[in-house]
Amino acid sequence: YVNEDEQGHNQVNGNSIVRNLHLTMQFPDRLFDGDTVEVRAPEGFPLEDPQRTGVCWDFAFVEQTTVTDTIGVLPNSMVNCSHGLLTIHIREPFPFPRDFDLTISVTTSNPSTTPFVTDNWWRVTHFAAGSPASIQSTHAVEGWPIIPQLRNATVTLVGHLMRATATSSVRVSFISVSRADAVLVEAVEPVGFDFSAAAVYRSAPTAAPRNSLSGVAQ
Image 1 (tube, rainbow, N blue to C red):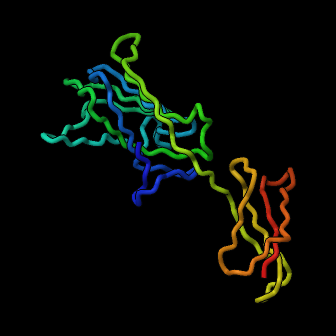
Image 2 (cartoon, rainbow, N blue to C red; image 1 turned 30 degrees about the vertical axis):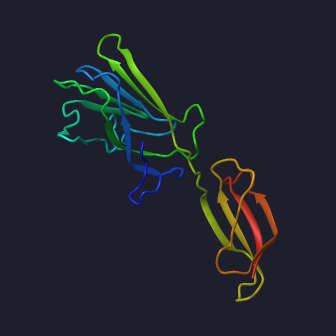
Image 3 (cartoon, rainbow, N blue to C red; image 1 turned 60 degrees about the horizontal axis):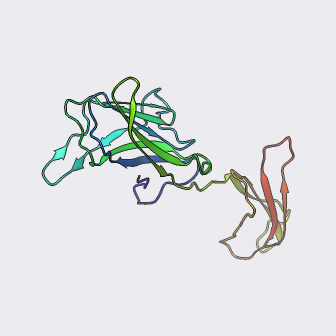
């Protein structure tokens, strides 16, 4: 897979949309009329358009150019999605060749945190036509790690001394998405912040689950 954005950066932030995700697969057998290809996303990755039930989110086949020609990719086949499952129903008069790249483009969104190690896999299965359908081949590729994002991060001046050069207090508050053993708060600009007297406390059980850090600034 390739999950880079237009600037070439991997799209790994938690709760962010992953656009133009390219998934490339090859099959040891040809894809015949009546066959089915299933692509199952890791836990928490939707492939279904949030606005249209059963429709894949910005789905498209990506054409592959060879030395001799350009293949129109599965023009008659049908594609549908349900939650994290994408199904391609092969409906072609001629079989799709074996050992040839089949690339699709789709949009999804990252979950808030990396799925559990056994759930963070992209799985592709080729089913032959028939009832019941038989598995021709299958493969799994581990998904990317998610960088959890803090929610509702705020920095507030809470001391009563607010004039320039005065020593006062600031409060850094946020909602954590995942468990952590440490939190790093760095005052980049302007210089002169002193967190040596910082105190950490949690919100009341009845309030929103926020974490706060109070420190001294000048």
